[in-house]
Image (cartoon, rainbow, N blue to C red):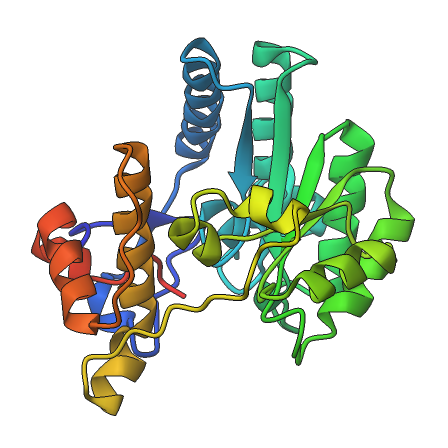
Length: 284
C-alpha cells in the first residue's frame, strides 16, 4: 500500500481492479486543504528558483486537483465542495497563489482530460466552465488530453475545436498523435495551437526537428510479455516504465533503446523504483 491512511477530498473508497492497492482515505480537514494549496505554491516557487520558467497544474486522470473537481470524489460540505465554484476553489487558489508568488512572466498551464468526463461526477459543461474560468484568470496555456485524436470515441476533435473558439488561451492537444498529417489537420482545423507528443518523444530525442523537417516516421511502442493476459494487466506500467527508462538515457546523453520485451520494461521499473513500482500510481 502507498499509505496506511491516505487522504482525499472525501472518504471515497477506490473500487475496481486497482481498489486493493489503496486503503480507504480519510477526508482532508479544511486546514489541511489550505496547507496543500500552500505546498503547491511553494513547489512552484522552488521550481522558479531552480531555473524553470513555468509549471503545469495536473488536473486530469484522477489526480488530486481532478478529485476536487469531480462530484464523484468530492462530497465535501465546506467551501471546497458542493457547487462547481466551490469544487474548483482548490485549483483557483493554487493558481492565484503561484501567480502572486512567481509573477506575471512565469508560465502556468493546466491539464485536463476528456476521459475524466462523466455525467455524475465531472460533466462536459463543468469542464468547459473550468477552462473558461481559468482563461479569465489569465492562465497561460491549457492542455486537453483525450483518448486518441485519430480514432476518438469521445468527440476529441469536436470538443477541442469548440474550446478553441471559446477562450483566447493557447490550447495544447495530446493523445494519439502519430502522423504528421493528423497534427497538421488539428492545427489547420483550429482545434489546437500546439500538439503534445509523449511516447514517441521518449524514443526519438530530436522528434520536433524531424517533424518540422518532414523526416518523422510514425513510431509505436509494442511491448509484450508473451502473455495476452499479462499484457492487458500491465500494459500501462510497461509503457510508462519504458518511457521513463528512455528519458533517463536521453538525460544522460545516451541514445534511446528500442526493444519489445515487456519483461525488460518491468525489470527496469523495479530497478528504478523498487517493488513498489509495480503498484498502480493513480487510483483511476
